[in-house]
Amino acid sequence: MTLLQVRDLDVTFDVMPRGAWPWTKPNKLQAVSRMNFDLEEGQTLGVVGESGSGKSTLARAIIGTVEATGGQILWDGTDLRTMSARDRRAHRREVQMIFQDPLAALNPRMTVGEIIAEPLTTHQPDVSKKETRKKVGEMMERVGLLPNLVNRYPHEFSGGQCQRIGIARALILDPRLVICDEPVSALDVSVQAQVVNLLKRLQREMGLSMIFIAHDLSVVKHISDRTLVMYLGRQMEQAEARELVRAPRHPYTQALISSVPIPDPVREAARERPVLEGELPSPLDPPSGCVFRTRCPKARPDCARARPPLDEVEPGHLVACPYQEVISPLDTPLSEPAEPVG
Image (cartoon, rainbow, N blue to C red):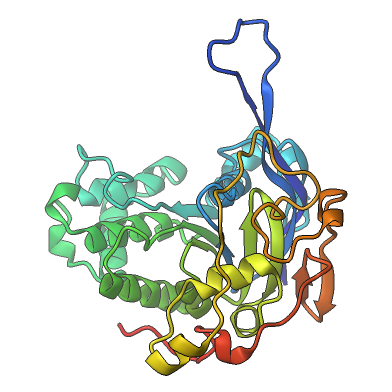
């Protein structure tokens, strides 16, 4: 069953030039442009791309903290943009978010118990204090925290423990969708694996759907069913997660994967590594046509004329490049199936 459908989603911000007069016309910043994807119940969609690609803006548009300026966000077939305020509040119980910086996301003046219980007291005020304490204790055990730590404050915990607190807070309402906005990027590698494994276990136990945003394709591959690659607010490629890292077709996806080293010195020395040169263009003045053309090794003059369509080159494999091609699997560092160690 399809839980979430995003159709031609646009998010545009008005940006006033520095030192401009109050009557000056603002510049338009297209943070997300014509985004399309589906999310099935119980599945995970990975979203990857460089900083400034619009990943977090996409997440915030779905959850409702940023207003979409075009397109549709369909939740069980209902457009969230047309929901009444009452329905929107009920919807917020079903969609929760886990943030990038685990310590900054927690109120330093609240105890762990108060932080985890806050969504319950907000959305289910009729639940008794005794029942709330019981649910908080059960959720703390579920995410790997000792219930006797309930009266401590966030600064007394490590980064990994703080992220577990954030996960407990997001799941206390038993949501249907959890949006993870780079939840492991601020953690050590070993702790990253523990948090990823925890999220996978909780997803199985609770039947969650997830949108998992990250820079690291190796992390996204392990937790995602499908992967969406973004660049400057546009969708470059979308495919089944393992298929994407086994046979990437878009030059940008290939460049992202090439940045991951192969733990084999012979293969690492022998493979051709496409280098991504230059800086990410300003979203206030994006390149014409294909926005990736200014950094693309395969760019041609006609790439500047029109935005390339998102074509289905294989069943379920979408690519926005007319000159895409598959690189050798031997050159793909993430092609070996592996699981993170908990």
